[in-house]
Length: 356
Image (tube, rainbow, N blue to C red):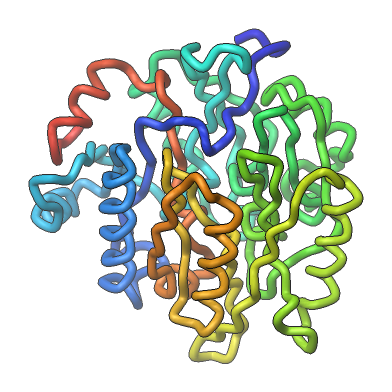
């Protein structure tokens, strides 16, 4: 790939598929397994309705059960695999391509995944790309020894890459890498032309150290969707999220801000859950948008409709996902058009099938 023109593809560009990993009873979803699986089935249905297939990583023992749950209209390619957990956003490959040629072949790129700074065992997750997904692509996967997660990176159509200092500067990710070191690496690997790192913004209970996909997202027409807390001035998050909005205004003054309300959710142990409305998935002309059964859901959906007037906003109940401290964007990874092999695309359109 030619780094001078090959750039990480913005999420709103056309996609052929979305990668998911099916929850099983050996993952942390075990206490809420059926509720979580119902959310995944809703996501699969919404992705298919948005004219994209689903590449579903699945433990071999669960394949028959998954096939029985999906109806004949589903377009799902099941890939038998072993993985630690289901946060595909953070270990599935990213895609770069020639920024000036939408028909160029997508280049799969992977970073090293170490469980968000060695918080959790991630050895199997880190092997998913080379073991199972690389063979689906037209080009060989490019691998980097740098530890980084997809949820930590947000890019627009001009090559402007966003991330957060709290995440990148965790020493258990990349020892003593500086923000300038990251800038050089991401310019080389992801083709970014501008790199902004936010110092503020973090949700209590977030194991990722402040992934950007829980905080700030680009829209296709120079907008920023921000997980704010204007509706909760007495909340512990108010000052940090307000400071984040101020940072966004300083770094991207020409961008219109769409501020999301902040929900307040707790688990049975009284721990605050990092429920974020910014953790949505753009899939072709739809935005799959997380809702949590909270009073803020309707206002959040209204903000999303203002931010994405050219997209259909599709709400997905993600209350089961936030029990494990993540949400919709965290479980998914889009695959832009002209990245997968033609035979894979053909099989993906044939209903529910098993790869290989």
